[in-house]
Image 1 (tube, helix red, strand yellow):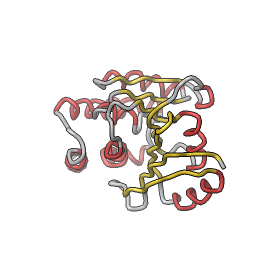
Image 2: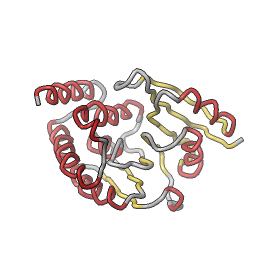
Image 3: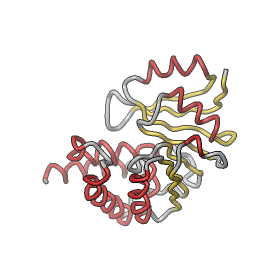
Image 4: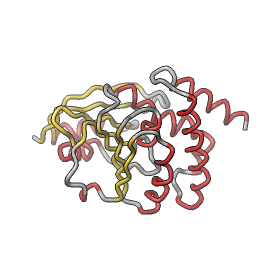
Length: 210
């Protein structure tokens, strides 16, 4: 339990460096963690091996995206949000409008409970991405959903003009970049991850199919 508290405090101290972390937002995230752990047995929301490191692997990992959101009033879509990472976390921390897109009915049932913890506008869309055809967004986020090439394809479908994607990617990013550049022309910038030396955050914009 002490180790769990240490990890929580470390994650919160990191988050404080790049966003205004209020007591109410800390409480909301703590309530989200409690809800997630309670519901995890029913919905298999996160891997059991990651539970002891939830504050680093899931909370901080999600929150770090806010460093690259220039306007908190942007309309954001979190593609394949799963248990609400990063969408629920960035909403609690100040993103004013976030749309959670998730095809799993069970996960959406959990997300509808979780959305009550955010003070901001948080919408749950139970649908496959291919079924969302009437929405455009300023920013797309994603964590462990698909390859960069696939994410760029979704970006051409969902992004407004001058919009961008901010995606959490793992150690295979270099290969994914090469594959994506065969199909798309795009600008991008890479940022280090706060939670893993093998991971990166990629921000992409001006995306066009070749």
